[in-house]
Structures are given as structure tokens and as C-alpha cells.
Length: 269
Image (cartoon, rainbow, N blue to C red; front, top):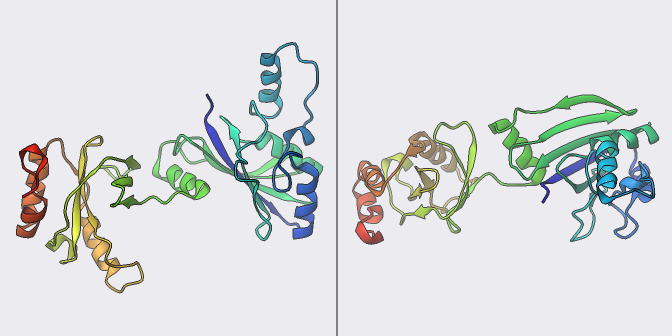
């Protein structure tokens, strides 16, 4: 079992035609334009004594045990941005891109990578002439690492009321935690939301509660930012039981008590 690492390569300092020319030369023949075949950059020898010997060679020379993959829906590329995306097993493709940059010395390659283990093994490298020219590696397990990984993997760090799942700050605000199976109350109005309808969310696994704006406004609305700031100011609070949950409901006012109070047996008043 391997962790999938998303690799995003941007070709800089070259024309769109040059980008196409390079991709035609390095593509996986069975996938086509926009893919990348490590064997065409660092050819794999034949006649390994065992599968283990083959995997060890790949790890030493490619930095990862398999060729590029992640093409179930075809190659992922953007001609206007001169960019390709693919996956590797456990580690990023920097060794291969370093070799690629030696072959195409007229191009700068920016590699951004992010592991399936969200907020770990993520970073950015600018590679040219076979060398790493610049590098950014946020400390693993931090909010900064999560932000970079989310941008690379195209993940929205938001919570969705309808599915009762998504990303929410930890109680101390240091990281985002993925929550699912969250209890979402009926909507109510309170001072903490400037009177706009909200729901109270209780995440059992991470033992916390927070207010979430009921989706009546879009981000372009003049009031959205004020309401959102007010809700965020209410904060993320520890919550280890339904008694704790109900104590927060009580402090949010009469409308919250009517709509969100949780009785024994899982019923709401």
C-alpha cells in the first residue's frame, strides 16, 4: 500500500510550443500527451534478479518505486499555464525532474507536491540545470503545510452543512481537522451571528462545537463578511457531552433553545 503524492510541474521560460514539444518526447505511450514516462528520462535497466531489486533501483534513481500514474480520466495538463499533474508512490518526483532539467536546460521547472497524508510531505522546488534553485518546505502537520497541500490538491478547506462533513479549525486554531458525521442543529438566530440564521455543529470525534452560517447569503453580499467575522469570533469550543452541548445552546439565547436544544434520546425540542 502506498501513499499517493500529487505532483504539479510548471514549465517556465518556454513557449507553449516548446512545452508541447517536450511533452511529446516524455509522454507515456499508452496514455499520451500530458503524461510523463520516467523511463524516457532515466531509463530502467533490464534483467533485474528480482522484483525487489527492480524496486530498489527505482527508489534510488527515480526516488519512487513506480512510474507516474493517476491517469484514470486521462492526462491532466494545462497548455496555457504549461503545467502537468500526476501521482507518484510515497515520494515526490524531484529526482526525475532534476534529470529532466538537465536535458532541457532552457526551461525552469517548478515542482509542487502534496501527500495524501494531508499536511505532510508537501512543498515546492524550483529546478533548473539539474539543481534545486529554490525550495519551500513548510513544517509538517502545520496549518501552513495544510494550506499548501490544499492548493496543490484543489481541496476547499470548508465545512458543508448538507453533508455534515468538511474541514474545521482545531480548538486551538493551529490546524484544520477533517470532520464527518457531525451533528448539525436546526437553524436559529442569535446575537453571535448578528441575527443571521446559523446552525450549531457538534463534532463527537474531535470533541468540539462551533457555529456555522446558514447558507442564505453568498460571499458577494455586503453583510457576509461582517456576519462571518462575528461567527468566527464566537470561536471553536471544547465539547465532551450532550450536557456540554446544551450549555452552549443555552448561552446562545431563546431561539437557539427552541431550535437546537438536545433532549435525551436524540430529540431536539
